[in-house]
Figure 1 (tube, helix red, strand yellow):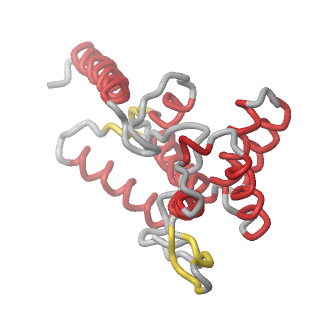
Figure 2 (cartoon, one colour):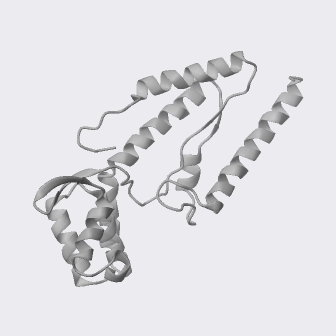
Length: 207
């Protein structure tokens, strides 16, 4: 859960081998496999894992949002009350000077630009946030492995990652957990796939 030389519990190649084995065993048991990719909230960087930062003169493992909130608390502010203030600008300036690789800082800078009507600057900051969003790239890599297995083994795929990325309404409670509307989207996608598979099985005479 830390981004300094992180160790993956299941490397992508092993993940794909496991997935292929699951599909094969499911079919051997008479089941019809159905694969899904993991949905993620678009635009907002993934900052679930800890990063190494300087806190009170010593190195400490913290999340990026914790660091921002703590810097604002020193000024008697929260992220909500600091929006549009010089204090938030100072925190972001200092943070980006020290931690230019933190996507959350670029995201907050983009939000400030957007609220001030600086659209071009906002897009540039969002681009930098995406460039440094290493956790999302990891998730994208595993999603591609799911798509690869589905295509290679002719498995029904519900690509929730792409479905959610294309939606503009708020479908998450946070960055990774869908809200009620998000779960409804998942349920609808599952229902459509199950009906499609059921129809195919009926037309082929399969039990």
